[in-house]
Image (cartoon, rainbow, N blue to C red):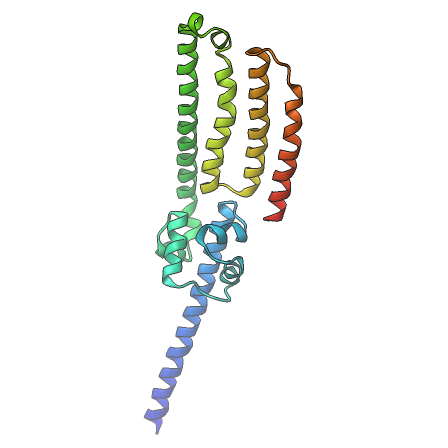
Length: 220
């Protein structure tokens, strides 16, 4: 009789410890997921779009009401560039700070390298234009316009990397610069090459900017 009760007590303790372990694991995953999302300046909706899940699922995971499957944890880990074991590590946040700083520096260098390629092509075009200035006519006299057109192209490069690593607020800022630098480039081109002062072209930036802001808040 006592042996039977003792066996039941062991089973009960095992189940209680197992439940506590699962609850603790849910909390660890919730904390690490919330930390990674905020560290990367993402809303729950933005993260949901990037890993192809609903924002409701992200919210439940971060509140510890549900636990992602192993497959989902692999998707999350792959997106953030970490291991699945990192999501299960209760000390991950304290250990990841130096790694995140290194990753941020690496991303900055990648963006700067890509932007330098754009401006290198602009410089090559500038030198070529000056070299054959006589043959190119009016185009040869305004080689500096190549650097002006490099500004909206630079914005597109920044937008590409922001899609991977940034957040939607930066989208808004980058595209604002894109529209106005693009319009400025075309205005200066028309002003100095054909000699047309088409300042009304800047009016096109108003609906473009308005549409962009509205789209930002619609998708927020």
